[in-house]
Amino acid sequence: MDLAVIKQAIKGDDAAFLQVMKAYNLDLYKTALAYLKNEHDSLEAIQEVTFRAYKKIHTLREPSYIKTWLIRIMINYCNDQLKRKTRFIVNDEQILSLGSEDNHTVLEIQDAMQQLDNRSREVLTLMYFHGLKIKEIALVMERPEGTVKTWLNKALIKFRNILEEEGGELDVQ
Image (cartoon, rainbow, N blue to C red; front, side, top):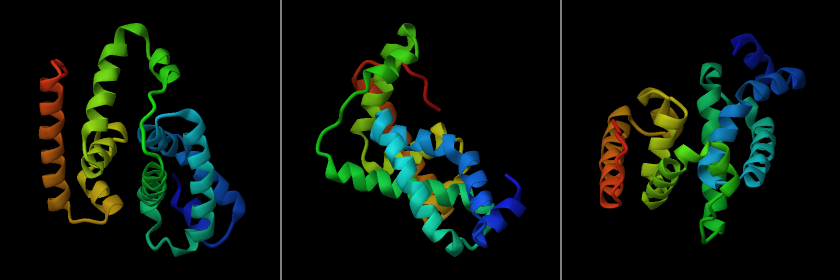
């Protein structure tokens, strides 16, 4: 994403803001889907996050971190939504769209992720589903890089243990 466009969006240019949101729409959708587990809620989350970002974009201090800023807003929104819901609903459409041979693995991963605490799920989602680096995750989570590394290591250990307990043979590194 061009920094000049981001700077224009920060200054209040609506067209630039829309361009920024289009550039990161897929990342926001993936984040929402990883947390909320269904398309409808994920699309609703994108709308709400777009609105929140539009209201607050003038507060963004470092334009190069727009992606992490937007993902942080999405994670906060999703966590708020999950607190309101007391149960987890598996989205069959999402599973079927991945292909029948992958269904078992996808279900194992989803189940293991749901058994993790919020922080572990968040750090793994940012690292492996969004491909963020430790530094970027630290910015999103507003924690030192060393803390994020520790959390990531502990989350991977928990994740592996859950998969092993359930007989999963997924190779997680």
